[in-house]
Length: 169
Image (cartoon, rainbow, N blue to C red; front, top):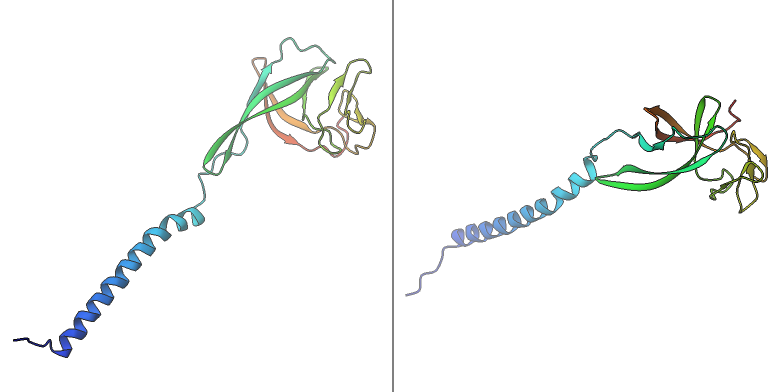
């Protein structure tokens, strides 16, 4: 005795299975799409762009004698915190302290202090800069870039590197 399923029940059973399969596909798709949409649409945590980094003690800084100070700066890259090593050429000009960026303004090469000629020298293309950061010779067209600085209890704090367009007086 084999009873045959009426056609109306077979269609309902088939519709149930199709609905269940499509529903599972929808749940799996939503589970996979939700993290991707959050990553693409929700911005990372906004933190202040400018953080002051301690470059060192300037109590023994002699006027007119630049020194290279090495410091670490923390930078936020999306959700990651990256600690980068950087340098600055620091010099006392009268009562003012100035911190220059470590790259030549011509092509970004590293320069050094030439004590014999009393000037900053880029060995790659022979650009020279005065103690005030002004171009004295070579292919560089603009003065050395300067860091924003502040001094707290003889500690030099460096901020953002500012591009110099004209000589600073």
